[in-house]
Image (cartoon, rainbow, N blue to C red; front, top):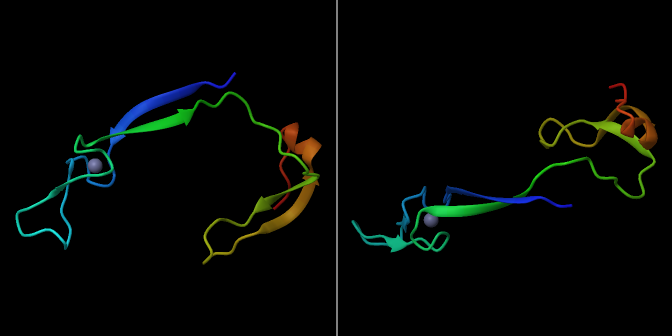
Length: 93
Ligand SMILES: [Zn+2]
């Protein structure tokens, strides 16, 4: 069963003001934010985590170097089987 939730969050496009003023608007003038229709409120839909899902076609698991291109991406260190990973093991870095 998939549990979904909805939360009300500040609209990031207008910093929850409901208004937007950029370089196209005259001094002292704003337009109604498209992101939230002027309410300042955005809704965020999420799926509540219950358990880790299986990933198809995977035999081996390694640690990641990172997600930032400046420090490097891709796998690093040793590898373990996917079955071991599912049992809670982690590969050596
Ligand atoms: Zn907005």
